[in-house]
Length: 146
Length: 80
Image (cartoon, rainbow over all chains, first blue to last red; front, side, top):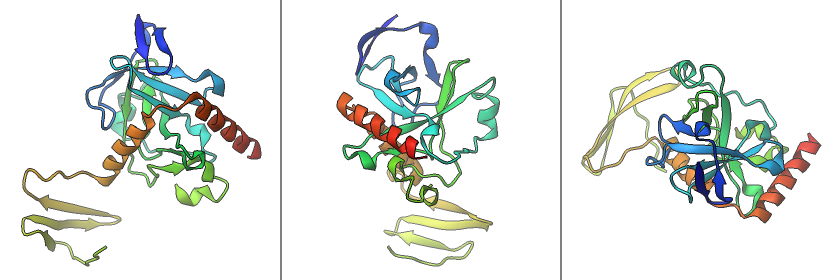
């Protein structure tokens, strides 16, 4: 099927690849269907979460590998038993700031995506992680900031 | 910021119509009860912050900006 995207114009997607958010992304309650587009210029570290229904709605997301410490979110049991079953990936909402050095990722509220079952959810962790973790402050004792 | 000490079972009242009560303290968690008029919106702060940062994550990043971002990340990775 063809969909309109914010950054890539009209693209052809496989309907089977559409992800359904079982609970909406916080602040975006009307939108449940998204397509995950890997940014090819960057080794699978950055991706786009493009709404299937609203061309102008597109999130930039980052692979947690981007932060240079071990990110170990405590995913609640009920999510592990439902969304996570048979394999899942964790991605982070990212804010690329006008001043690059102020760019952040949200470690507190990761996206849990099951690409096999095509379901996803954003959760808010109990862990002491930051909503705005500065990506480029890592060399300066980033561990304290998380 | 106004800072008050309260014990379990004690409360504070804001504006004469909002009551915040300390229900239970156990370990590093505190259960708080809030009584307020229906039109008062109450949210966990991390939810508000997440909504705000989600909105920003949905802001278009110009291709040039993205490219310099990617280059900067690569440089950081080389330093590791």
